[in-house]
Image (cartoon, rainbow, N blue to C red; front, side, top):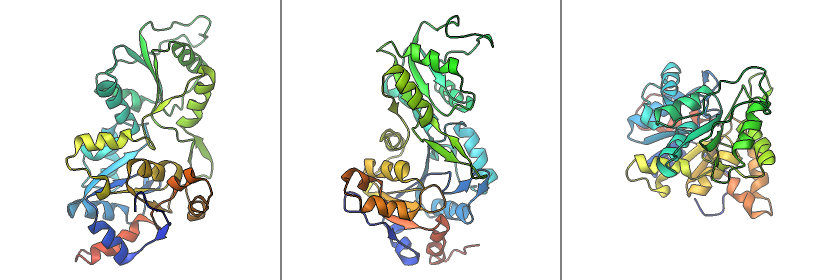
Length: 312
């Protein structure tokens, strides 16, 4: 249905089986789709393991840049996703490292506003980062600025300071310094009902102070799909299904890449918002509408029962 009018079609049972038969690649978001924090969504591990065992190419596309891919492998195993390997994981931090190394071929240091997981991915790719060694009382008036910063990369940073923001703003005064962002997610839900500001909130602040716009590497940018296509052979958008929980990120990503899309209702977005976008007079909103909707990824389980595989 990619490229056609999208209808938020709620599907189950045989319809899911027919859809899976038509797809070779299954792209999955993580948070809100297969797990919530440190708890797997019921049935998700069974579905993922079964997809892999039935020969589907399963890849995970996550905007969460806080941990390196090797840590994700441990999490998958810990939560019961025992068939997942490193090469199936495409995080915004990993793809940002690939972009800096392989696309722009950075020559110089990168100033990072982000967590240690992001820095570790850059280090794995051989990309030098500016070391943070300021005195606790340092200010933008007297702190040191590195002389060879060729890119500012913004991700989720739970230790964000005004000094970091000021430094990044200074580096971006150089028009040859790249302004990159792992993702532009505005916020993330917490189990307590509170929210956690996302990378998008930091990007917005820096865009205002620098007067520049960031190039976003993660979803909904096409670059993540280009990373997948470069590492897997025979990736045909028509044979791919993108499954996610956020309309403005996952569904738009799928639409931008020409993929069929599926919304699961276990995360951020709900079907009422999707229907609102579908009925909108703004054509740009139609790119946020999923082709298909399921209550949960566990709705896939009957499809494997038909193949003679027990669902428990």
